[in-house]
Structure formats: C-alpha cells, structure tokens
Length: 347
Image (spheres, rainbow, N blue to C red):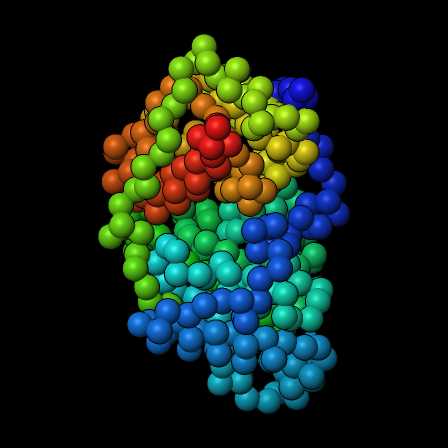
C-alpha cells in the first residue's frame, strides 16, 4: 500500500543553512571518480579532460599563500581561477565535475547554475558571496545565461569569488564567450560576458552531441482512468507517491521558489501526473525544467496520462533559445518514465 501525497499542497520552508547543505552532487553522482570515468578512445579530448581536472584538483588548497602574494604585488598566475568543461550532452561532463568535487578538499559546493542563481534570489547577492567565499571550490553544473539579469549577476559573483581565492569549475554546452546567444541581446552585455569568461580556462570534451541523436522516444502515456491502478502496483508498493493534477502542479510551482524544489520532493519515491498538457508559456516551462532536474537528481520515476513527454514543450520552445534546457528535460523525464514502467513491462 502506497502513502499518497500531493506536491501541490506542499510548501517547503528551508533555512539558509539547509540551502547551503544541499550543494553537493546528486545520488546519481554520489560515488563517481576520475577512475570510474571511461574515456572514448575515439575522442582523445576526453582523456585529456580527465588529466586537466586531476591537475586542477591538485592545485586546490589553502588561500593564505594567494592572499600574501596579492598583498606583496606578485604577478598574476598564468592559469585562471576556474576551469570550464565545454561539450555536448552525454559526454560525461557532470561525471567529471562531480569527480573533481569528490577529490578536492573542502569546504566546497556543487550545484547547477540555476541553483546558484536561485540561491542569490533566496539569500541576496551579498549573503551568497559571504557564504561561498569561505569555500575552496565552487562547482557549477550546466552553466547557462538565460537573461540579462543572470549575466550581470553571475559576472559579479564569479569575479568576487575568484578575487577571494575560490577555485571555480563549470560545465556547459556553450563556450563562455558565446553564452546568452539566441536568448537575449547578448551583444549588449559583452563586457559582463567577457569578465565572466576571463575567470576560466576552457577544456573541450568532444563526443556525439544530443542534437545529432534526436529526442528519445518516451513510453506511451497511460489512460487517465488506469493511472491510479497502475500506480498501485510494484511502482508504489510501500513507498510515498506524489499524485497531482498536472495543471494544478504547474500553478503551485509558481508560488514556490525554485531553490526549494529539492525540499519540495523530499521523501517522494515516485510521482503520478494526471492529464499532462503541452506547456506554452516560457516562464512556466523554465520553472518546470528545474523540477525535472531535481526529480532526475533523486531518480524519482514518473507515471503520467495526457500528452507524451516529447510533447511537453511547444514546438516553438523546442526550436528557440532555450532548446538545450528543454531537450535535457525531455531526455531526463523520459528516462524516469521508462523506469516507472519497467516493473509493469516485466510482468
């Protein structure tokens, strides 16, 4: 018998300490290492990236010496404060970033780009800087600039952390100097983008890009009248399942700060969504991508009725400036939907 809850009725309350304590790799990457990464022999840049990150990890230590050098006017080091992994979807960037985090001394933080911008929204810019500048390493997964506000914010944040002696590491599908293209008038913010790019040495990781593979085919949605019965099978046995009307869930997400989505799904073992509909509003879609990432982090399977997952975002969105976000979300949600239907398929 499942314990049924509803995400649309949850209002998580999270303290500053609890927010900061959430900045570590998800369970999917909880035990990865450089040794467990398997470079493709056909892509030599992958093995070179491992070596570059191992060397970068070895350079992370106390900040005292750096401060003395700065005080006495020593020359700026040849290498930058950060390392930036550029490559397509599925080449192992997050695996390598998490391996760096595991190998480096603490205190340290690991989170997605969105989680850091949400942290600033929850705490304020100054409190975020004061908290993160105590760290030796800050890892930023899926670095992306969505709007001018993000651009100015992250440019300042990266510069201040770098000046404080914090080592930075990031992953992205876009080179630093090209961030923001196709999403807003990035040319008007070239100064901020260049300041941001100057914090990093870029390491390219080659491999087959998701855009060449196309979207994965999701499982067929279940008829709505069969959804509850399907959720009562092994999918939900002795587990806590969140059952929600999709439209009500989207409305509820608008009132919960994205920095709290991790806590929103705390203790949830699976989700059931009634009447999934195509999302046509950009702000709603971007919030939902954050929820999709948090569900994927915790490996929460999904059962749903309504439209298939590959129709979750409108055609205009899938061809627009945020297509990388939406492709990633569809890929991750499809994996979770397949996982939910595996036990049923094995009967």
